[in-house]
Image (tube, rainbow, N blue to C red; front, side):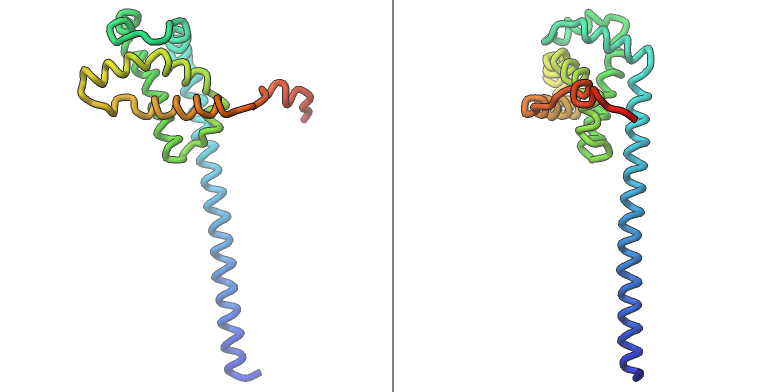
Length: 170
């Protein structure tokens, strides 16, 4: 084998090594991303599984849709901090879904009803708050998330998991 042939073979082996390294790197990045998504989902579940959050969610579920700002503040007199923290959870989720840190499908599977109903209760309050504050961005990601979920529900012919997987075994 000539020096030229050995040089060509060396270039081929080097190029193959670079390609193999890039493929491996891609697989590693994918695994890290999946791990981060699992951790974010775990954090999501933990943040929504405490007595305070559940109490506020139950209070919201017992409200009619479309209360204005003063009506909602009256209903939550002395507890507005709790309600705003509850709304902030949906706001944060909206940002995380928009930035693709969490998948919309995962959040929707876990929390579509609470997010959608909470937005229906909060919508007029938020519009009033935006008008009063002069800031159109107040609770923007809460609204965005609820609207994505409502669109998904309207477009879905999804069969509930307890029916689809009713005969599931380990």
